[in-house]
Image (cartoon, rainbow, N blue to C red; front, side, top):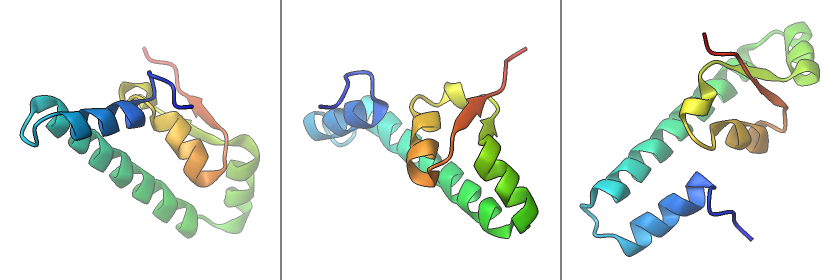
Length: 91
C-alpha cells in the first residue's frame, strides 16, 4: 500500500485528478523529469567508474548532497541501483 508521503504516488494522484495545465500537475511532472535526469546521471557515472572504485561504492553506498531537497530521491536511487544511500549534512 503506498504511503501518502510518497511523492511519486502523490504526483500520480495529482496528474490523474487535476487539470492537465494545473500547477500541481506541472510541478509533479517537472520533479519526475528531474528525478529521471539525476538517475540517468548516476547510472552513467557508475558505468564509467573503474571496477576498484565501483566495489567501494557498492560496499559503502552513494552519498547524496542536498538529496533531501527532492522528496523521494534517496529512496528512488536505492530502488533503482540497489545501493544504500546516505545524505550529506547541510551546513
